[in-house]
Every structure is written in C-alpha cells, then in structure tokens.
Image (cartoon, rainbow, N blue to C red):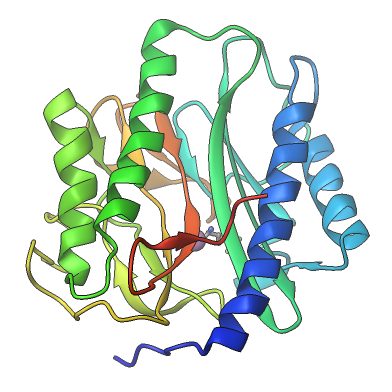
Amino acid sequence: MSIIIKSDAEIALMREAGRITAAVLNKLIESVRPGMRTEDLDKIAADEAIKLGAKPSFKGYHGYPASLCVSVNDEIVHGIPGKRILNEGDIVSLDFGVIYKGFQGDAARTVGVGMISPEARRLLETTAAALKAGIAAAKAGARLGDITAAIEAYAEPLGYSLVREYTGHGIGRQMHEDPQVPNSTKSILGLMQGHGPKLIKGMTLALEPMVNIGRWETMVDDNKWTVRTQDGSLSAHFEDTVAITDGEAEVLTRA
Ligand code: MF3
Ligand code: CO
C-alpha cells in the first residue's frame, strides 16, 4: 500500500476539481423534481461539468456507462441512470466526479424528491452528519481508523447500519488511490480506532458513508452495477473529497 502525498500546488488543483464537482451536484439538487427521468440528471451533470471545463470521470471507468450514479430508495450506490421516473417521496443518491487539470473530485449527496417521510429525512440527516463526524476526525496525527470509528460511532447508536463492503478511498490523479477508508470497524479490513496509517498533511481522501435504515448486507443487480440493500430498506450516501492539513481537514468538494 502506498499513499500519495500531494504538494500545496497539487492541492490547489484538487480544490478546483472539487469546486466543480460540488457545483455540478448543487445544480443537480436544484433540478431534482417528481416526474423526471434519472437519465435527465445524467445529461445535466455531463453538460454542466463540460461547461465548467472539466471531464466527467465515471463514464467508461471499468465500463461504467454514464457520467453520474443515481441510486433511488433501497439502491445504495452505482445506480445507472435511465428511463426510471422519480416520484414524490423517493430519496435519490447522486454521486459524481470530474477530472480537471489532471486531478479528480468525487462527491455524493442524497436528496428527497418533493416531500419525503420523516424516517427518510432522518436517514439523510444522519448520513450527512456521519460524514461530518468522519471529516472532524480526519486530522493530522490521528489514524485512518479514527475516521472509520467516528463515522460508525455517529450512526450506529441511532439504530442505523453502515455498509461494510464499499469504502471511501484515497484520491488524486486517480479516482481510487490507497488507502481504502472503511465506514465500519466491522468491514473485512478490520480497521479499528487508533489503528491504520497516521494521517499527515497532503493526504487526500474521499470519505463516503453509506447508511441503511435496516441491515448492512448488500446485493448487486444483474446489470453488475446497482448495489442495493438485501432487506429492501432505504439507504443514503454522502461523500466529500477532503485534504488533510495541519488543522481541520479541508473539504475540497464545496462550491
Ligand atoms: N464515487 C464512486 C466511488 O467512490 C464512484 C465510482 S462509480 C463508477 O467509487 F461509476 F465510476 F465506477
Ligand atoms: Co468515491
């Protein structure tokens, strides 16, 4: 395993990539409404990224067929945009990334379509807050496992499950660099609080808790991409690309 440390000049470019990624997600969030097709969001994302001078990074990655991942309700991640129509009350996870001047941005948000149930609203708030807790733990001198433990310690006592088979990751010139960043100490990586590599200035990580109302187990559709909860429960996903600094982590995917 080798973690690539970025210079200040490289972080500056990742800040640009991150800002574009966040701006595209903001545009998508404004656009979501009942009656639209998930492929409409894919087109908005690709057009907006290109308008901002960046290239959508997901298209063609291991054969992924779209620019955006759109995961609805019990879908966790990697939903493929298509003819599916969004209905009032759905929750929709939007995951998007770009390449800009050689560097990657990667972020995700889950939003409601029109009015959603209090249970769904609470899931979104919890997942966003779990990401925030992970970011707060991502300080120079701490260990990678402190991020994992902070995410878990936020969401689990509230009765939610963290997805174990998919993780956050290092990010830079490649979308996926070392290290993997699990969201659960019970992942196969077995990363616990106080363990794992020490965090140092210049590391850039994509933190991305996936939180289920029900159990943690996942399954993959016949399309080989769409990951959903085995028990059919709702799932939410929030992701930010962050840089480790001497103080608080800097969130790069803010518009
Ligand atoms: N944000 C996802 C990730 O962190 C997106 C990758 S999906 C793919 O891995 F479509 F690009 F494969
Ligand atoms: Co990611």
